[in-house]
Amino acid sequence: MSGLEQTMEVFKRTSQHTIEVYGIHRPVSFDEKMFTEIMESDDPVEKFSEFITDIQNIDAFTSTQDFFQAKDGSIIGAYTITETVTTVLPYEPRVGYQYARMVRNEDVRWEISLVAIDGD
Image 1 (tube, rainbow, N blue to C red):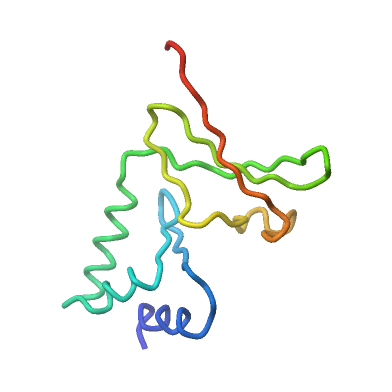
Image 2: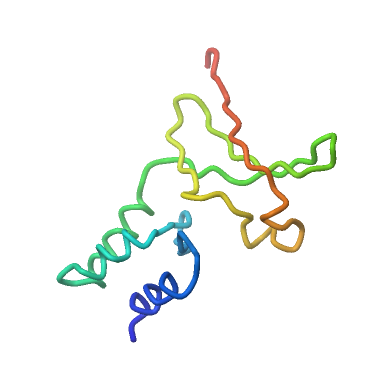
């Protein structure tokens, strides 16, 4: 069974809505519909490769996670979008592997910070 076929099995066996693949420049999230389209193509490996390559080569800033503690003790996870900057956000926010020892995804309230530019 190929890696793509194994991934389709994960969608079928679990309640996951997306699967994330870590690329060179940024993670890529797939939902079941996207994987089905890849698997049903004439050449799934080539289709997957093209899709990943296209996503990795987007000329855009990939927003990173920041975490803050609110006054009430809750944890806020935030991504930032800056005016006039093309930005990649995750398909579905969740705590990245690098923060998994510090915070649990179910404990985070996710927000987006918007930054406006006034002048240069």
